[in-house]
Image (cartoon, rainbow over all chains, first blue to last red; front, side):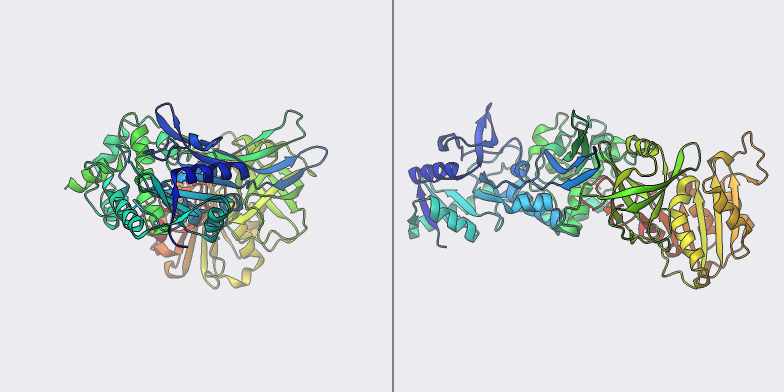
Length: 344
Length: 273
């Protein structure tokens, strides 16, 4: 499909039409920050945000998700539960979309995870070229300023109007059904290209890792015994905030509840974090990453080394959320890689 | 596509006390099919309303119709299983993970070193070997536990000790207040008692985390090559399918890349042992 143009009014009408036809979540203002939340009206949508509190991952891998339902009385019965209500996510920045693309692969590989994959298949993603970056963002250093797949539609603010490009036939059909569009003029195309090109300059000048992405893994491999891990981990509260806000973290715990009638219940998964003290602890009490340093270092190696083996790219997209939530300021990959690189 | 988290219902057909803290369970799948495991693999056992836990399979795949678990009560799920009687329903997912080298070691010598409940997974391979005894050459079994009261499968241990085609050695750390007449001392004290041909011997080591370093040193001192030494490792294998992240040992998932590892494959991994 050719690039189309949505005037501001046409965009508003498009969003209103989407809201009327099904569940839509979009970026909205929240106490001076931004968050994804169900959209009640198009004017609540904010498209000039810097970063959201939580990544849109929460709609595809929710914080709490039922896996099975069971009965224990009168006899034991069990059934699998796959929740996959269709939803449209509006305003996804490229770095967050790149993270979703990674999760797609990780949940698909070897043992396909139906719960994730069905929900993903039922999700429509309308991506958005960033107009601003948070002060912590370093997506350019993580090659995540743009993304070429995973979206159904991609919106780019051309100043007073939006360019819209379809990434899938589903996105194209959505646009045809719900929006009034115009053909993009040669000037629009030129403007679109220049806006997209300038995205990589949005991150602040002090938010650069002084090494290219392919070099990062080899830096880590040489620095496993660096004193930096110990020094930083000494200040770690093991609060797990860096895990909880991360768009690529996907570790989960599995728990279950018996209903109050004691006849049956459900088993569910919920987000878990490798920085939490009991993450690797087993029933006998043995904890295989008991020391904070081991947990702290594990997170970095998992993202830049272990998952690199599966993804051929680091499992970090440079959103900067971990740096922004860390009270002792020890999680910032920019500072860590630049320190490691300077170490002898 | 069937959910990878949906257990199959199964019935406990036999329960027996092994020690004060371990019980034996024979389990039959609801579908009647064989579990189809290989020696060394594990299953995720569900007690509905309580949770799910990874448990080593203790029986040989040559046992048909049902399989066996030996479970120590240590947490919510295992304590709940200990309350269960024959006829009770549990859920089973699996078998999961890698297996002991039952194919590669045919015609070769086997040295089993099992400490405490490490005997439980080792037993799946030992009994497979005994069911196919002619396929293997020398079979040496070393078993050690803290005291005589912690000995598991005592009838089987006695039958192994009697067999002329097994070299069986056993020790306890301390005899406590029993009339134990056998060896006393940690499991490594059994190593000087055997002479092996390291080139044709595969060594299977299963025990508590503390045991590995000492036993591996003995095995290496006996000149067994690192790629002929196998260990089975314990981790928090919550999902069993390589997703949840809890069982990671550096870049490896214990539930998928293990629990059985070749020592040569994990020597460089700081988190392994």
